[in-house]
Length: 571
Image 1 (cartoon, helix red, strand yellow):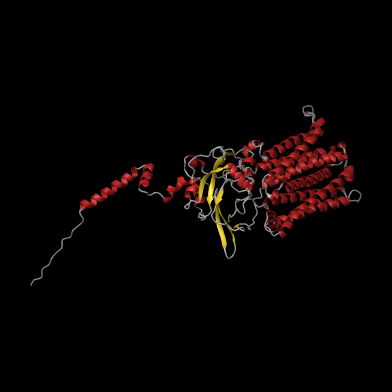
Image 2 (tube, one colour):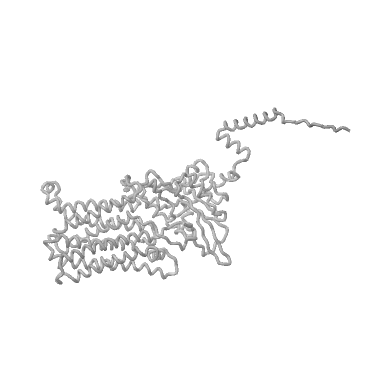
């Protein structure tokens, strides 16, 4: 039987089918390229391809705008917040924030017992308060509260970057953008709300933990009086925040922010340090010179009065120049008078402007009469006494406004009484040491009278002023022994720990320049055989030590003052 070989035919795919599939694919791709963005979105909507969260967007914002007596507010469901920070990312992305800018943050509260521990994540942003401290404190009116929605908006074009709103806000909502030179903050995505679109944080939360509600302003006031907001947050009656935090759980009474015991130095604001110290030196020198004039007689102080006034004026003008370095946009500093009605910062600027003007005229009154060309044009001689009182009064007004600038923040470590004593004693210490130095260096004709009467009075006044000031500053450390972790204890911890170097030098400079050297010179003159050159050298060294000590004290005034903020932020 012969073998039969069968050959199976090779069957290929029909070319027509391949060409058909290829043409169909090309046609679909070509069709997709022609669709507009709106058509693509519509097609995805019809195919139910949009994120499932989209169907909840309209449920998270009110259907109607607020009525009179109402406003928009954030409502946070603490039970739904998982600290995923989707809200932080969305806020950053959709608002086009810079890399280091954050308008919304997430923190952590924890407490309970070892057997039943508890923790709670908290998302927070601007609370769009009923009485926003940022708006009342702004010297250029760069904030406005929308009369319909109640949203507190920041006007970027109006801002000069003074950063005072950051100090005023107890919840750390405004953020300074160094690159732009202005402050910016959350505006509840007002443009999106105006178009019935949920804010970025609301729309991004996967659990719907954030929503926009309409609240009754009168009810918000009543709730603020109960002092119930969040553990570790500033008291709500300060600004009356409108954000509400809801939970069905019973949070333990010992809940604390996760960073409650974390203490770190704050920004020292060097330009403000220089401005405050030098303005108080200038005011103090004018006032002490005026008092010395009353003690020794007007004729006796003509020899050094002009030099003392000029010296004080130079420091005062330098202080005003240093303050411009603090501004993000100093070219718009002229706007700082716009907030006179509500802002202590505007009033401080006005007070020191008047002081600088009066001080310039007073100093000129000593020099103009000796210049034949100017004497007839500026007859300031008869006005010298009225000008001296105008300088003193305007200077004291400026220092008082400086005190109120920080007292208005309602922070415990900057309360009015303590800050007022510090600023007034700085003026006394530096004023007396300045006049003492200038008088000894430049007084020739009335040196004997100065040494017998004025020298002793100035030296004694300097010793007493510095001793009282250092005693009050030392009293801060008594808070270290207290069990409660108060704001003042935080300051003491910083001064005794991270800032102990600056603290040590502050007390050393203050003691040497304000107590030791003046006491030595006080008991060495006038009939002890000590030469006037030695006394002059001691006065110069005492002034330099006092000045260095006050700069360090004012540095600690800022660096050792823990900032008020929302609880739970971890760094």
